[in-house]
Length: 84
Image 1 (tube, one colour):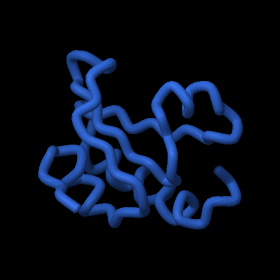
Image 2 (cartoon, rainbow, N blue to C red):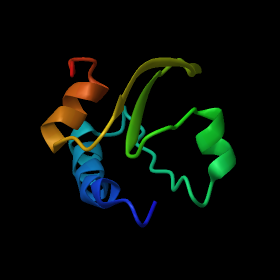
Image 3 (spheres, rainbow, N blue to C red):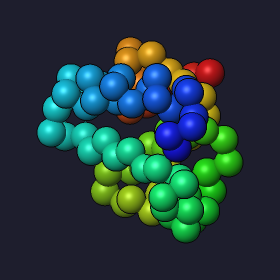
């Protein structure tokens, strides 16, 4: 959401993390204001929300975190090494 300060802080860090992680990971940003139905289906309550899915089964959510993270925390989250 454009009004969400932590979301705006996180956006360039997602790009940096995606570049570092390479082509084996897909990072997708979704504006919940522009796509409320998708946000609802994903049960996004707080912003920003990061969701990690099983690469072989995108319907299987593995982990979720709400709030801004650093680039290193994003990478740890993607790799399954993040605990808050």
